[in-house]
Length: 372
Image 1 (cartoon, rainbow, N blue to C red):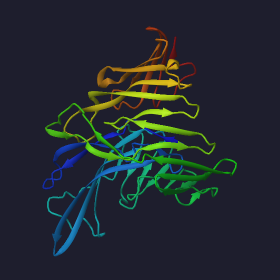
Image 2: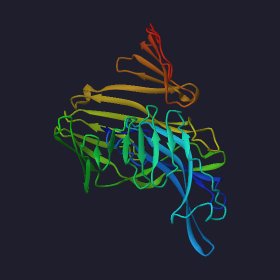
Image 3: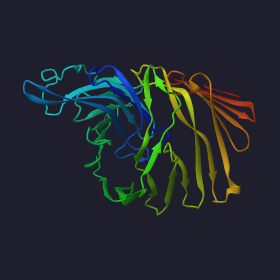
Image 4: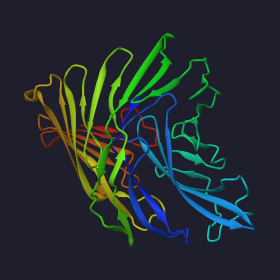
């Protein structure tokens, strides 16, 4: 499965080099793979911010590393944030015995995500971290690569990025600029090959998030910096999809379909719409969100069908989707995390005709959760 998420702008705190607990500024940066990635095997991505300190301790040169601001993107493209903090020395020495002045040697190695649905254990970092899902699935995530080492369920079944899976199917990845080739086996044991081609000219992004600061710490825009983008994706059946992107924020703006049709997106920036990451000196931060989605099966603009997205409510947690016929679907998400949908109201025009309530983490009686 090829995953892309438009929600790829994250915030990186920049800590004071002399006072490691003080945030001097905050940078807007893209996640590791804003251009999309293959999922299912190996199945997830980890990202984090690292602060490096260099010092002399008892005549020994020390590089001390503080990893924090961890994020995990699962196989559906959904991001999860963790307040983990892990300190380690590059030479393998004990950080408590060989400590750079001013660095606080306090680890928070086992925490739950901002949504409370996943656990991250960084005890063995930088060798690997372990993300544990609600169903017990464990994802082993190395420091040296954003993709996972292996996935293991509660029954001992596994899939590995390098060693195949429980039934010995192999997964390989090769790169010859500008093409990355992924080879695996389908359910019948046949070789299946996927290819993605990078854009040959990297794009310079220039963001303009509106809020100037977060609790006194100024925001730093992403200026004239490049990211890698995927120009096309080819599937084992011979179908090829093309991709274009926003020149300033880098989000996906168009998918060209094998049929000659397309899917187009536009975006909007909303100030103070998302909850700030844990530990930040402000409560809210800006958010980029989808404004319209246009689907066309033929490639002729007369056949465009456009859905519009508007946002309202506390924390902008209500998303109203208006279809090409003027009917609405009003999605309400949790005001706490914004990740769990709690209800959907379907409207004919603006007249409600059906309500579906989502009871997250609760058992439903037969017939409950829906009204007309």
